Amino acid sequence: MDRIKEKNYRLSRNFHKTFIPERRYIHAILQFASTGKSGDIQSIASATGIPTGTSSGKVKPTIDYSRGMGLITLTESSMGKTVKTPQLTPFGRMVLLEDPFLKESVTQWIAHINLCGPSCGADIWYKVFCLGSHTLGTQFQKSQLDSYLKNKYGVQKGNLIGPLVRMYDDPASFSSCGALKETKLTINRKTAPISEEYLWGYGAWILCTIEQFFPGTTQVTVTDLDRMAGWRTIPGWGIDASQQLLRMLEQKGILTVERHMNPWIIQCRENSNNLWKKIYNDLL
Image 1 (cartoon, rainbow, N blue to C red):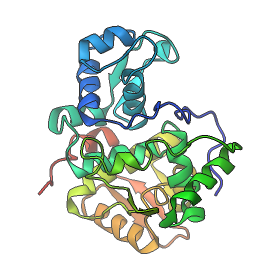
Image 2 (image 1 turned 45 degrees about the vertical axis):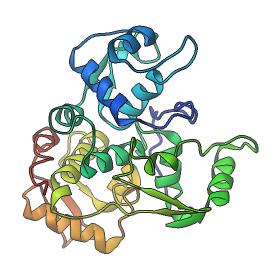
Image 3 (image 1 turned 180 degrees about the vertical axis):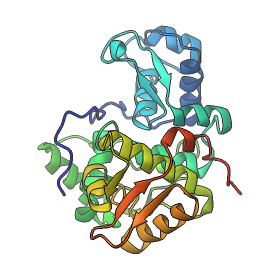
Image 4 (image 1 turned 30 degrees about the horizontal axis):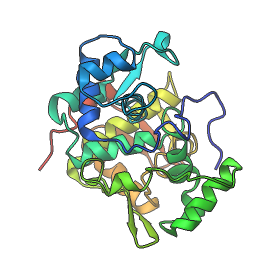
């Protein structure tokens, strides 16, 4: 698939320093961001209790995970700088208010989908869940994943998989999402679930994606949205599942779909800021 050509802000392949994202530390970063304060790694570590050392630690990877998951942004002046000024996104603000430790499945799925995004996610997650969806399929050997990543990066040595698989099996991380599940040496990719409790979250994410990739318009074809942002590819939805989701989102009044056109056209009926406030409304 063709993807966006413009400059992206995806996290580099080694940003995680082999650490999985731990939800309690993400919570601490969200709390810090809510204060409006700035700080270097050491001062943020002191304020949040996230362990760090003089040369390595979990603060920087946790900030990066939080940004890649769409929970915070960094001010332009602090991008790539020693002093960081994290700010809550509309998604991050609702998570801090309603699900501060990211326990809910809908929170983890939206954060995961963002982490796989082509613009501000993490490069390895993007390559596996977006670019590599057809190459790898829904079930593959760990050796296949390793070979795929080494081929993509043009390297032959080292462990490129890192925490990619482990995070979805660890209760301290994203096991409620469980997007990848390793059994022996086989890895299974799970499709994002479609049910009533996820609709506001998916709707907010889709509308936010349209606003980001197609600014100034409220309508886009389903094929262009997937080509640019992977709205079907990243969650793993086939044609039937994606059409089911669109019907359900229409019933919510979030969007309309023009089915007389080929490809179908999505027309926004809301803005994402309003929808982020509703993402926990229908939790069971």
